[in-house]
Image (cartoon, rainbow, N blue to C red; front, side, top):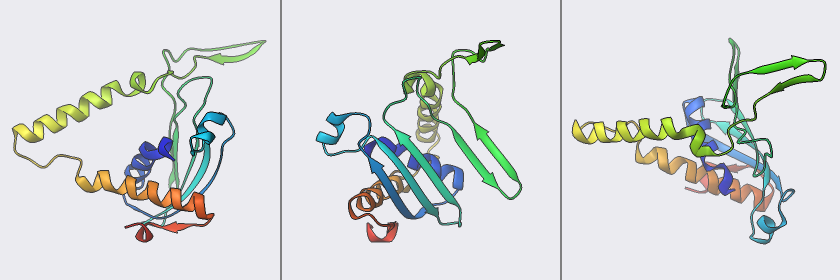
Length: 165
């Protein structure tokens, strides 16, 4: 479940709260070596959040067309979606179909600006003796989610975060 730790971060951010319970179904469907190492490469994870929201993460270690990472949030008042970053937003539509750029291939290409912003915020907190925008709990909670996910995978049942604390 190593491949999902940052997705757990994102789910917490989007929901604005911590997870309460996790259920995982997963397989080794892409790369035998990953299975031989004791991990999975394809997973669907259902998460019950503290505010009642239900989150679903589908994850694979391989997307041959680029680094595919999208998010959608549905609610009673509408929906917000974010798509993949690509080198350009050009879309060609013709008699052969609709074609666009592949998503950026490597995560550093996608998140370099975010990493720079995180470092700047951390340095500003040190310089101004203020509280950083990310706490130790923000680091702990995704780890607890990963432990619950691993337990769910092994035991084949939903696991409450409180069971792994």
